[in-house]
Image: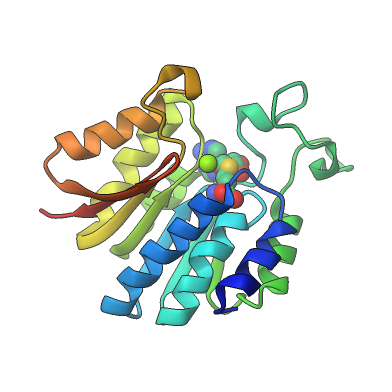
Length: 211
Ligand code: SAH
Ligand code: MG
């Protein structure tokens, strides 16, 4: 799935909250990075049904990288029944909980990315504690609550190699557009002096680790 038009047609059929322009930016920035540093280890926090994993994973496939796509697959707060982003079709009939794993798996299989996009199923922080491999690309799009977003930031960003990319989704400088935590961790990354911004698209911010 290397051609842009093919990618665009495919992702239209995938459930998710990633606008096409932002998904394409994810694809372009990660592919450009992969072309310079091929064979990297990439990871996304927040897989949902695999939409962002296809945008990034197709770039990983083209450049010989592997993308770990991490999620406990039970959704965030806003995905639960009664909330804004609830989808009753994603409820597991056995236990009544949200379960996006079968849909994620179907997406990755249909995209022919099973050898490139590797699922990690579990709580982000538990996985992070036992994940020793340095990261060439990290995409943070997991829980957006204060505690979860900060925990992701603290657990995962130190694993990025110098020269590696940090991409953060749902960064809204204006509080009227969305929640604060992704914006706050983006500011923290810049203020740490370890990252510089290299691009943005919609609510996506792209940073590079510089020290
Ligand atoms: N990146 C996806 C959307 C992710 S939505 C896309 O653009 O297609 C956010 C996801 O984060 C949800 O699927 C939710 O289950 C997951 N999530 C939230 N908190 C988590 C945690 N602590 N550990 C693992 N996954 C988490
Ligand atoms: Mg998002």
